Length: 562
Image (cartoon, rainbow, N blue to C red; front, side, top):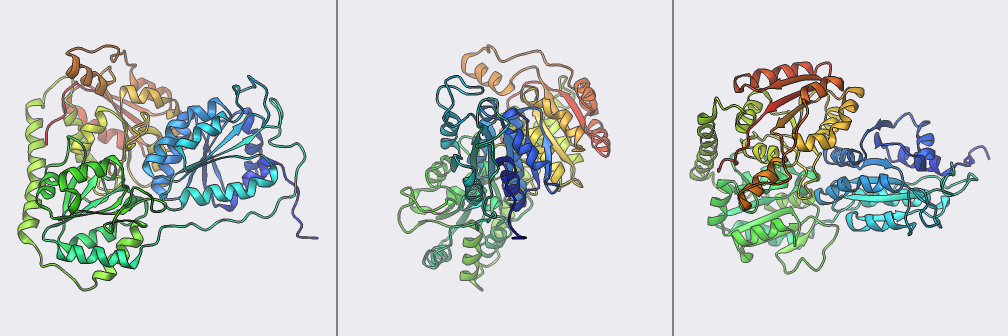
């Protein structure tokens, strides 16, 4: 009897599950429907609680944690508005294949119409999350909490990782309890093993045979290679095959820019020049870490041709989108490891001409960007490319740059020097604005010894600035770089291009440097292009003791063509 478990409330059961899963951080905004979980976590010292100030940032932080660590990021929000306000980051994690456990309070199981934080259907939040998660669960009995929580973590990290949603209803509108008032004795928590798609040896052999027979193979890398930590295997395979490596735009960083076979990213209408060249001459593209049916595959098929395309898909399991012997589903790391073992001692002769072509192509891009900057050296407002060039000058290869959505993202994607997946973090295909600051805060907490930059336009930063005090409060001393042009710049440019004028896209920005000072950061405003590099260095020096915000007064210009 000495080992008999104590009875616990629902909040304590959730806290126990998080402890047993080894959760290190939780991102949350408090609310009355989740008080019991807060109470349970108050007695779990192994979990660091991050109290955010804006509910959208809660899920964005959990997404960033999942990307940076490979472990499920956990966030906790209250019922109704809390869940809906945090949906953007959950959908983003789904598109980015980022593991997340999204926990929410909920209205009572049989709530009245117009219940507190509710509408007519008590399960409406649960139903909304079904389409943007791998699994959405509404717990109905306290006895089910251990099983549901274990399943949630299992699904989030298995196969193609992604978000899951678990909500826990309150007993009544204003009850202090979740699910039931009486505590219950629950079974010990048991973790479920992670499951990934194993490579089929026959498919590995088929792939190896086609690669060895190809005249000019190309490797197309997706974010699955980053998520499953297979960058080293990708590089090794590229060297063995003497094959250029291209990547989807949301997998930038899967291979370093100084790698001999780096050929840049592909995307509709704005491919890296080397990417276009290698796809024009290839007779076989092996895609790994991509998904059948995704937009990126349409682009590859269009450029390389269906018959020249093989795919190792990044999904939980095969489905109807995968057809024929040239398409399969497997964990990217396991498949690449098996493929390298199958190729064994096979090694293509060193292709000096191709290596020289690749180096010359990259040098030509950098040269063209430098030439693009020259006429704008003294522009006032500041030409955005000058800022991006200065960032390359002051940041080392291990620096983390989390870019928000919009013009800043496009300028950074053009200019940023790439060494690792953290060299240029971006939201991905979901493109949720306000990505930069919350992602940078998480990155600084995980990598305190590295320089971490949040890059944002003024419009995007205004959507997320409520957590600038959070950065200061938790010692996440990031450098925030805000491009101030008084507009939602990308939509401003798009409207101008389409209609010849713009409407509803310009606004009056605050003084962001002063805003930074008010929130505990070092604030610096730059309006002279000659001061950019010095301001960035001053900001980085300040991050030894506090966050820093460098506001750059920029002009509106089309992005340079590569």
